Every structure is written in C-alpha cells, then in structure tokens.
Image 1 (cartoon, rainbow, N blue to C red):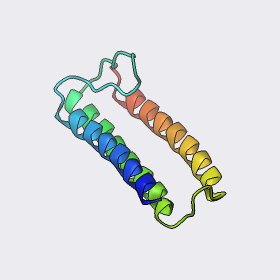
Image 2 (image 1 turned 45 degrees about the vertical axis):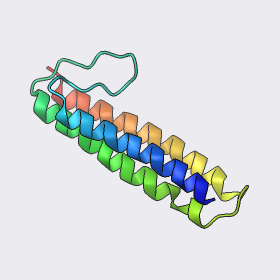
Image 3 (image 1 turned 30 degrees about the vertical axis):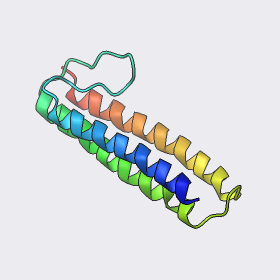
Image 4 (image 1 turned 30 degrees about the horizontal axis):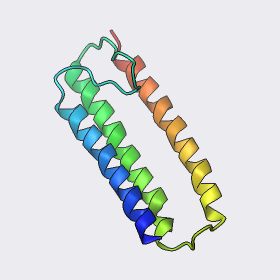
Amino acid sequence: MIIGFIIWSIVAIVFLAIGFSCRRSHEPAGFFTFVKPPAVKNVEEYNKAVSVLWFIGTAVFEIAGLPFLFQEQNSPYFIFLIVALMIWVIGMMIAYLRIEAKHRK
C-alpha cells in the first residue's frame, strides 16, 4: 500500500500548492470551481484565511492517509476512510463559507 500512500501524498502536495497560490494571489482567491470569488473588504486578509484553510485541510488529509502505510489491501478500514473524507470535504466547505461571510463586503 506504499503506492497508495504516495498517490495520496501527491494529492496532498497539490492541495498545499493551492494554499500557496491563494496566499500569493493579489485578487480574491476562489474556493469553489466555476464560482466567482466574492467581493471582500480586505483581499490580503481574506486570501490569508483561505490559504490557512488549505494548509490545515492538507495536514488533516495527509494524516488521514497514514493508515495506507499499515493496512492490507481491501481492508475494511478504508470504509471509515471514505466516510472521514466526506466529513473532511463538508468541513472544508463549512469553514470556507464562514470565512467568506466574515470577509464579504
């Protein structure tokens, strides 16, 4: 399952890169695909909050993938991993909506 963890880590690196690009952006960073970013009061503060969301989300994502190193293929644990990832995605969306509400003009 080393290959599974390597692929998982590559996805985490992509999320980390999204966080860095949000931090360096001079325009409001979008979160949802095909949705225009909101008009915000302070672009720098908003982008920093969004990038922190991506950094924390990446850390949680990578920690959730650690069992790939210790589980056998087709382990029942992966059902819990799928449920945890659904909760992670919903948590990321809720956190972003709170950030957007706080920084919206």
